[in-house]
Length: 68
Image (cartoon, rainbow, N blue to C red; front, side, top):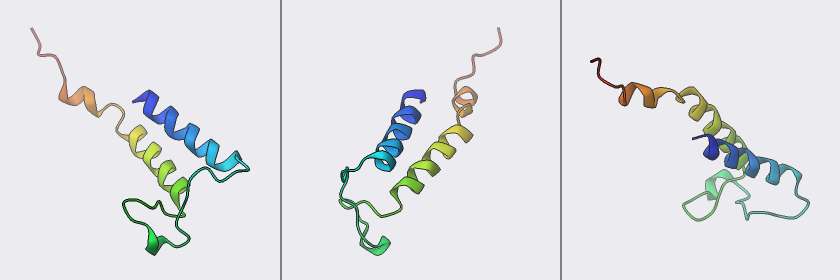
């Protein structure tokens, strides 16, 4: 999970700092589909990070070791 969060943040940084167009994005949110990312991609990626951090420890609930 840590690597996924780091990779997502790296992509956000790349989108914000690059002078070249890194990805082809739709001009309007209505044009977003499976193959064309929307103009709010950075916001969506930030939301992904927040969700992952909010549920970081949920895996421990599923994989608890039984008390012996």
